[in-house]
Image (cartoon, rainbow, N blue to C red; front, top):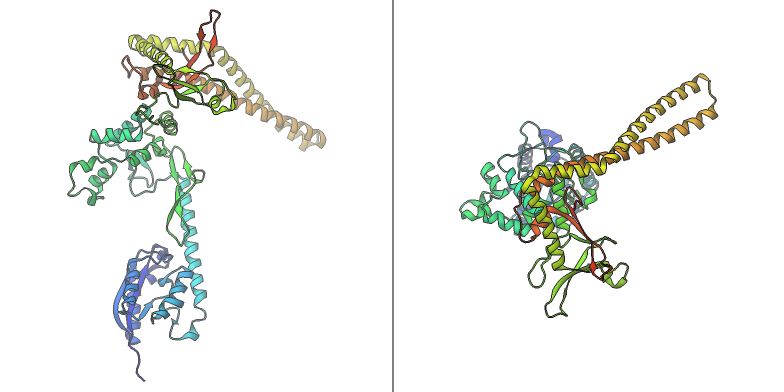
Length: 537
C-alpha cells in the first residue's frame, strides 16, 4: 500500500510565559526533538517556522501566519509541534484550528509530547481537555503577572521604555526617576506658558518657532531610537511638536512627583487590544520622585484646561472666560452683545439667570466697565511692587497678620488644650482598665465610663485636626504673599489686559448685583481674588 507523502512544517514557539519551564521548551530543544521525530517517521520537512517571544493566547504571530499562507497555497500538508501549547493556549482558537481548519485543508497535525496525531482519531479524545488546561495555564500566568505589576504600582515605580521628558532613569534604583538637568527647562517653559493662559495649540507653535527639540529627538540622540523618523529628514523634524504631545505633558502628574499606573489594560488575557480605564481605577502613588512643577501651578493649569477659552465668531477670544462668577449663586457669567444701540457693546450676565429659570438675578455688567476696573487694579499692584516691593510685602503681611493674629492665637491655645486633654483621656482609660482588672470597678461602670472617655477622645481628635488645618491655612496665606510679590515683579506696567496676564495674576472675579445710590447713581461691587493672596483690595 502506497504511503502518502507529508510535506511537513515544524513549528516552534516560545514566550516569556514559558520561562519557568527552563530549557525544555527552548527553541533549540524543540528543533532537535522535532527534526529527530520527522526523520524517524518519514516526514519530509519543507520549512521551519519560529515565533520566539510570542504568547500562545494570540494567533497573530508572524511565522504562524506565514505557515498558514503556505498551507493555503498547498505547500504544507502536515504540521508538527512539540506539544499542544506550542500551537496555542487559547482553547477556542486552538480547537478551531485542530478540529476545523486543518481537516478542511487536508493537513495532518501532530503534537509529539501529548501523543496527538490527527490520523489516529481514537487517541485524540483527551485533546480538548489538554487545550483547556493550556488555556488555564496562560490565564494563571496572566494573573501572576498582574499581581506582580500591582505590587510594583504600589511601590510607585516607573516602568516605561523611556523616562518622561524632564527626567532620566535612576541607574542605581530600578523604577526610580531623577530630574534631567538637560531637559527640565522644557517642562518649566511649557507649564509657565500654560499658567499664563496659553493653550496647547499656542504652546506648540511657540516651541516649534523657538526650535525646542521634541521628546522623540532627545531619545534618538541618547539611545538611537526613532532613527527612521529623523535619519534623512530635514532639520525641522527635530522641532516638530504636536498639540497632543503638549496636552499629554500638561496633564501628566509625573511632573508633580506622582506615579500613575493602570491607565489602560488588555481586553482579556486572550486579546491584547488595549482599552482605556476609567480615571477612578488608575493607580496613583504620590511623592515617588522629585517634582519639577509646583502642585499649585499644576492645579491651576488643570483648571485652565477645564475652562478652555473658545473663540467668538468674530475671531476674538474672551479674556475673562472662566474667571468671572456671579457673587450670589457662584455660576459663571455669560458673555453677550448688546446690538440695540448704535454702538454695540459686550456685557456679562449671570448664566443661571439667563437660563430663564430666574433662580438668580441678572448681575449685569458691561464688558468695558469690568475691563477698565480690573486693568486699573492690576496696574496699581504691579506699580506698587515695582516701586517698593519690600514695603508692599510688609504691608500685606501686616494686614494678613492683623486680620488673623487674634484668631490664630486662640486656635493655638485651643489646640494645646485639646492635645493636653487627649493625653489625660489616654491616661484615664489606662487607669480605668487597670481598676477593672483588679476588681476596683464593676463591669457596668467600666462600660459606661470607657464609652464616655472614648467618645470624648474622638471629639478631641477631630478638634485637633480642624485646628491644625486652620493654622496650616494661615501659614500658607503668609507664604502666598511672598509668591504674589514675586509674581508681580515679572510684569512691567500693563497698558492692556490679556488672557496670559489675567490667568497669571487673578484667581476669580465676583460680580455683585447692582444697586441704586441715594442720588440714583448705579453702584456695583466687583471683588477680585488674586492668586495666592485672595481678596486684598
